[in-house]
Length: 465
Figure 1 (cartoon, one colour):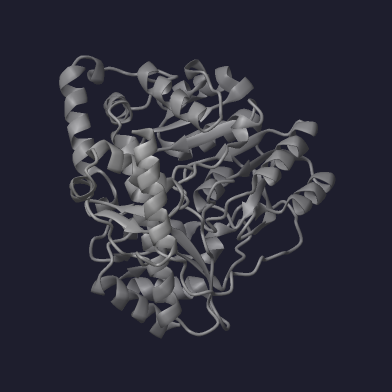
Figure 2 (cartoon, one colour):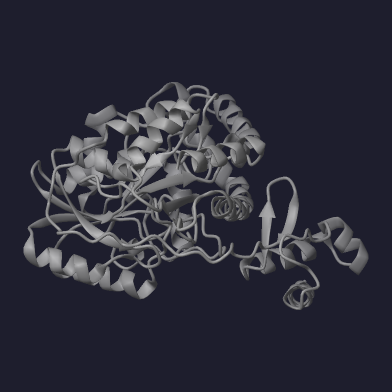
């Protein structure tokens, strides 16, 4: 089969590159292709998977294999905002609560919170996994699954990390209530109130809330929409301020969606290790690469990097299953997890284990990567079409959010409030900054069901602008 699938993959790749199949075209179904060529279904699937790994195909949920959508029309990226780097308390996060409440209101068009619409999630597979876990482990699900968490789940996570080039023993993983709790535990383990934490700018507002709740000060480091945190700016900041920890999202950061190059990852790890500054890696979007190549982890370069992640963006935000690989802070993190809330709920852990074990997770991720890439391209093209000339847009390499710089003297806080009055939720730029920078910026979530309702919402935003 090896030679047959590769021969078919090479032939299809040549057809695509020669224009025989255009961007967005649907390839023949697996069964039809197998009958047409006298091949087994397994051979055709292997060939299509190879094309997917080459970045030529994308899988659309419950639809089939399509020639990967070409990048949207070229548009200038948002500028890098550089200001005096000085530690500061986190302020201006009150707007976030309105944003989160809006995410639960079906009457509001959800473009603000980075929460995938249910249509992007394997809801039926999750339902079956929960039912099986409840039936198979009736007594166990009624009890606490004390820290570090379900051993079978930790074993599967360990295997996935190994596939990404990162060796973490199952005993060195702690299951958490999502990535937010993992980040909280990581920062509590390595800092004390009043300490300075270096972060990307812009950064995920949830991290800012954690920093605020722990009484820490944020040191914002300029971040490039293409390559991530500026290592030159970080090195300068480290020479001036007593930084106690650094938190980064090297793989498809939120809100920029940028991917830090491997050489930058290596330099970052070496820089912080030499100064004995704990490095906390948030990898929540790591499985959502548009290229279908899983990017490397900082944890794979240094075992003492603290890795935090969850299945909230890939599988289900509602299950609240995350994890942390604390390195040398293992005992401290396990104890803090116990003190904080005793344990992560048992049944979701066992359901996620089932989805990993039966291959549903991997199959879903393969499909949803293409879905998200298509959603981002579609939203980008609509913004270019409807929004005022001069709007600048990020070009993420993974995830499902885009970062916009709006033209003119726009106050994105005021825009967000007016948008809510019109039944539209967006995320204003200042909530992604400890010092409320990015007044002319907004973040849009693309993980929504496309249709006339979304297009009307974008037209309304354009009129408000």
